[in-house]
Image (cartoon, rainbow over all chains, first blue to last red; front, side):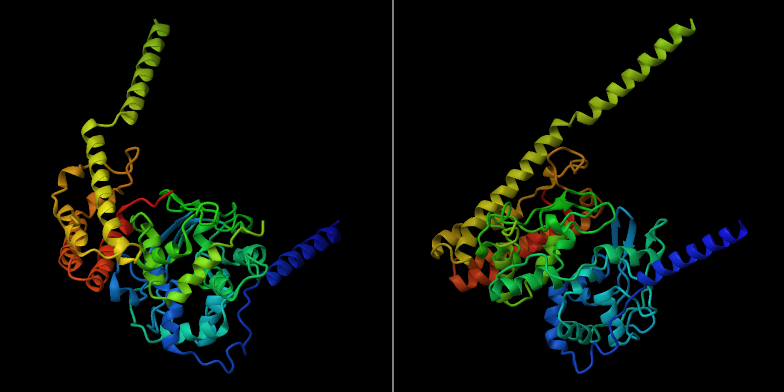
Length: 296
Length: 156
């Protein structure tokens, strides 16, 4: 009997250990950035496309103050409240002391400098699909931005979601490689897909989530409840978004809808970012949105 | 006697609940009217923006006289304080005005001032030529969006 218990305990340890091993944080391979040089000028455009400042600028910051990535903005969710961390170039309170590889691993694998899992409030599952060159450019640009010594606010997340090791399981379930919209796309639609599915992480808000917070990709961009509790985030598939491509481009440029209402809420911040992209990129986003859901 | 008291307690509770339900569904007519009025005012902006925006976006031919006749600036300069009574926020059916408006009223007034300035500039530029109109139109959109970003409940 004692032997059986000992065996049981042994197997339990193996199971937990195996689970932790399978779900361990996996940073990028050490040679990922070998031979890649970041261009801070190109990185400014990537920074806008990826919407970094919308979450990481200080709450209520406007205009140039948005380039100080002091963090502090609160994001309510079903799992608790997340606070955007300070990712400014400050070596103590920001990420100025992180290596390029550590930053790239955070952006594309959701792994911190100390090798811990990061919460997916940070859309690394989308950024995972970004080109390494774009990530390198982005990091080079971020290093040119001002430092802030505002300390990062700890997340206010309850049990069991406060156990970061559990995020490995989440990643295993929901961090999927590959594109949602597949099939034959034109070069323009492919560019749009990259901007929407990878850098722009549009699906993070416009796609509904399951009980564990995983994106329901079968409902891609079909709208979702607003996690803040205020209203709904709209369906932007062609079934509901009936604007012409030109009208979508105008919206992403000036914020005006076809009947001259304007973008509101978080989308007003998104428009500030898309307005900084080349016109061709906004047209690419519009071209992509027109083919979403066409395959189903 | 005990039974009677219990009846009385139940009756009192029912009345209280009914009262609460009525209070929740009952909207002060003055508040309802204010919401209707400011929404009409917003639609009036939309109509003027349609005229100017159609030209700015090259959807209709530029017409200096029509552009100069647009009344966007006078709409923006209208004193709207009566349209925004305390309590006319998202707690009222049909209102998308977030309660933060009345918390940050100084910021709201500053943003309204920015809209007045942008529309005044546009009013001068609109009749000059198309390029001037285009240049002055964008900042108006930004001024509209600045308020909608923070103070309007997102569309459903």
